[in-house]
Every structure is written in C-alpha cells, then in structure tokens.
Length: 158
Image 1: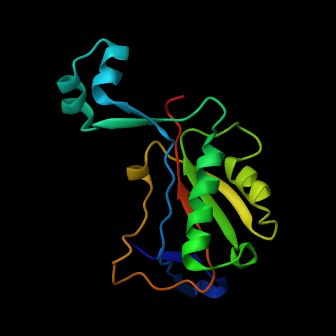
Image 2: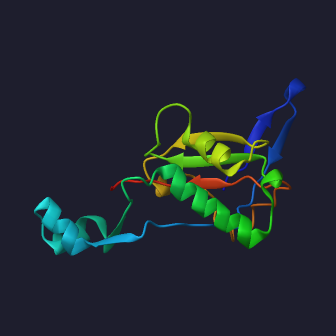
C-alpha cells in the first residue's frame, strides 16, 4: 500500500499509515448454486463459471439491505477484537449497492449501531477488488491507534 501524503503548511509533508488487522463478514442465508442461477439467466452452469468463476451466490432477503450485512460484519469485528463502539472513530463503507442515495449507508450503519461519535461515509466501489485496501500482512502498513472500520459490502441479488 502506498502511504497517504497530507500537505502541511510551508511544504512540510507527513505520512499516515493504517493497518487493517481484523476482518468481519456476514453472508445472507439463502444460497443459489450457479446451476440455479444459470436457469434464471438461460445460460449453462459452465458458461457462468467460465465468465465469473463463481460457484454459488448468496441471495439477500427482500427485507435485508446492504446496511444490515455491514452491521452484522461490524458486530463480528467488535466481538472478535473486544473494542467498544466508543473506540471507533470512523466507519468507511465501500459499496456499489447503497441502501439509498441519502443518507449514506455508512450513516445508517453508524446510527443503527449507536456509534454516534464515529464519522461515517461511503466509498462508491464497483467491487471489493476495486477498493485499494492493504493486505493485513503488508510490512509497510503500520498500526493505527484508533479503530477505523472499512466495510466492503454489496447486495446484488434479492
């Protein structure tokens, strides 16, 4: 990961580095195998595998939003790391499938979790691979003193 350079007065620059040390996840319960998805599209299973390399899809319930998946993932991180909501300074939510345009999905997550001291914003991202996140094992990435969850999440099927 490249470090982020912030421009200081008088041309002095400093570098800030962030380490993502924990990852949480949550998947919808309903599973649709690629063969079943192919039936929906009128395509053969092998055609879909060749194009996407996806063997199964998770289907969100009609009442399950992107923010719901993000909340479950963050609660898992909070449980695993034993941090409190008050320790979180910012929630960054990366998605191409926002709950709605305004307010941001990150703000819905912040409000539903009760993390009222945390800043919250979305990053528009077509896929998780498009989000420039460092690998947890990257030696150039240093520890941030304050938790700052970055939540890549999408609901593409309901």
